Image (cartoon, rainbow, N blue to C red):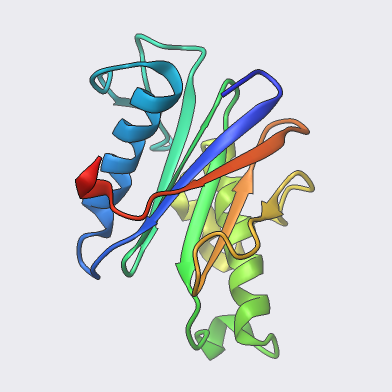
Length: 166
């Protein structure tokens, strides 16, 4: 990870393991990208955004959905969201096709997470996606992934085939 790029790690596991998988991805990313042998202590801001008090210049965000997991690392606040591509809830999607709905939803959620507003900010549709948000096309097959950096930056993706074999 450099000052000019942010890094997003992703993996697909068995449904029901995605929460643990997301935290394992973060630990792996910290080890590979920064040489940290163990995860620093995590605290949460009032809106719920996690951070490392001992590493104020290191920002991260994680997301998981039905077997898929992602984590983003950057030097500035970053948001990331993943959703399994599936039939969209019609009451929320309106006339949007499934993929279009989840692209919009993940962009809004990544925006909210980067800003540290808390997921409650999504009630009623949430804010418009930040213009810096970008979908990560084809990163996790069968999933929609969007990252929302705080600045223009190159995004490097790392797909982990078998995290248990790290």
